[in-house]
Image (cartoon, rainbow, N blue to C red; front, side):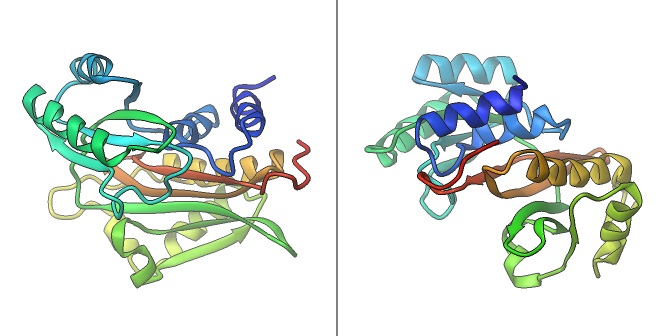
Length: 234
């Protein structure tokens, strides 16, 4: 059984309707999509050790399959520069997360001005469809996205990237390196493969993908599964 199958089967066994952020990024990583360095922590000691291993500054999040939008619920603390910042953030999140099933996620802080989004949704008629566009908090406002029906090849993914109105943002501008389109296109292709190979996956939202020294890295992700009780055959 592949790593991806293991992740999804375990979630099905727990009757989850979605993967946690940590599980979602593990699934992406299993398909070769670059993800930010992070670690799960069950308590303060594990959070402290994880931050030391990852290196400050870090981000602290609540990682639970019950939470889809952490920012709106106040379940994320960013740019924690040292252990004092981390401890204060941990206690705040611990209080806000009461009643939720999940752990904490310590993640490397990536600072960048370019944010992208990739995704997959299962259309009733066409099946898995992949999406690419400008990401971050303005994704739903700008609507600068392109779509293709999976499976797609490299040329399809590159066409998707070049179709958006903000394509020039991906070029070398204002001292920033051009985005590695090979890595980006392979990540888009991989989402289509996940949709085709795993019928239980209903939707994938990778937002944002941040660009660090030209390399696209998935910073947050959500994988939605078919409702418990529906056909979950692989």
